Length: 365
Length: 259
Ligand SMILES: Nc1ncnc2c1ncn2[C@@H]1O[C@H](COP(=O)(O)OP(=O)(O)O)[C@@H](O)[C@H]1O
Ligand SMILES: [Mg+2]
Picture: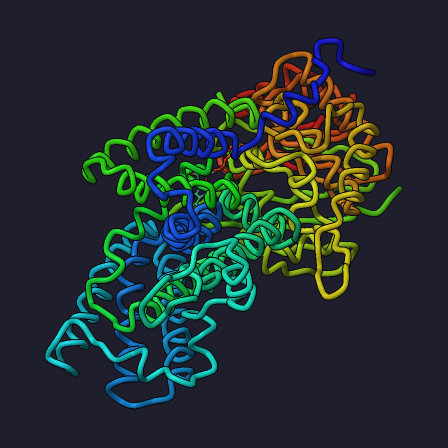
């Protein structure tokens, strides 16, 4: 028997009604806006594109972690502090202690991922909201970072990381660039801009694609695949949608949540390592407020703050919006304080649209 | 006469000082609907949770297929073939019907080194199983939140049956439903019974119980007042039992002297 009240789902509607619609609309809006006000400012020349895509990629790396964790029903407010912590750790190990950079990086990853696991473990064992537990770690990790940094170097900024990393095999995986040959070749043919004088004359202004962008793309593809195509992805949705219902049918909710805390920490560490390798230094105050920027990207991307619903691609677009707006206002010469006004407006608009779409999709009332 | 598939003997369950169950005995046979009735707070949910491995009984024995069983988790009970559709948390409304249907049992397909969920198969089976229960889905990836309460219960029941439940426990599946949806769910229960599955149907609605039940057990403040067969008891008598058993003496004969 077929229900006569069921409306035929039109193809257009099926294409339009998706969790990422708010983020897609926001992205289009933002690009149109900046093409109009900053189209001839160099924002869309190769160097400009590299500029905002690197910033967006940074947001995206932590947004992917935050997105999967939020869908699994938890928050991590310690991401920003962890970025500072991981950076200082790498700098102390490689510069102060003289360890090989690759060992320093791997140790930093191991420690951060363990702290992620500890976060998850405490949330599960105490039953406290992750909001509170990770807020504690926001302070603990930031405090430890500053203390460690002062203790070993009497400073809160540690330089010399790039020098220590010379010839290292792992450092370029985070701080290097790829396709440099291709960009040189394009420069030689005059297709992209090259330096006309100085020591780098003849070299392309944009040397290649920063590994940071590759990491971002890799994490986005991995996150989207994991969430939408695998059994584990179904467990992520289920754990955040209703942890008890999920565990009754045998979903290992605790394991899923702890693994997502570890993945978030992993993403924070990728961010930190890339930043340290790019700047050649670590600073104890790096990563400030990054946890909120990650959460905002995720929410613009259509995820539900209470868990069980969201999209990695949406979160990545949220990060793109974030990066383009931040750098775009710089290119257009607008007041940088307007960044916040603009961002707040986009956040509200996207969330209103997202809520509307989600109600259609999920039948929420 | 068929053997009971599950037999609960003198089950007690204490929560600290609270005695939620004070010695309840109950059994159910394959192909039978055994209704568990009782007012709110009578201990119905607590009782079936000891049956499905959520709670460990403080004392008493559970025989499953004639052997004594100790379920350490709902997973154990499920593996043995005891499936439960809970009153409040049957389904996750934000997730699609397919994702809900396969939750915890996702089919996996290997492509090269990657293990992915087999959505083609998952979607096809979900549509088929729902159709068997009389529900034609618009599309398998529509969210459960867009279904009516009765349809949600039916997804949960279809899921339990598909994954080989021998005992299906339904905790107040009809309590939040309208008339039409209730009759759909009752019809589904009847289909499940005809498939040879033992059904434990919890309700506080006497009419719903009498519509499909083969046997009736009433719980009152954590104690059972005995079990009656279909035809041995009138709706009024059941109602009285639920309300506290004022007519106890009068009913003693019809309940086989187990009071
Ligand atoms: N986990 C628990 N801890 C303490 N008391 C409980 C718990 N679960 C149930 N109870 C108590 O046991 C009694 C029976 O509850 P329940 O089985 O939910 O009743 P019903 O399902 O028949 O409405 C109630 O008094 C309830 O407060
Ligand atoms: Mg109950």
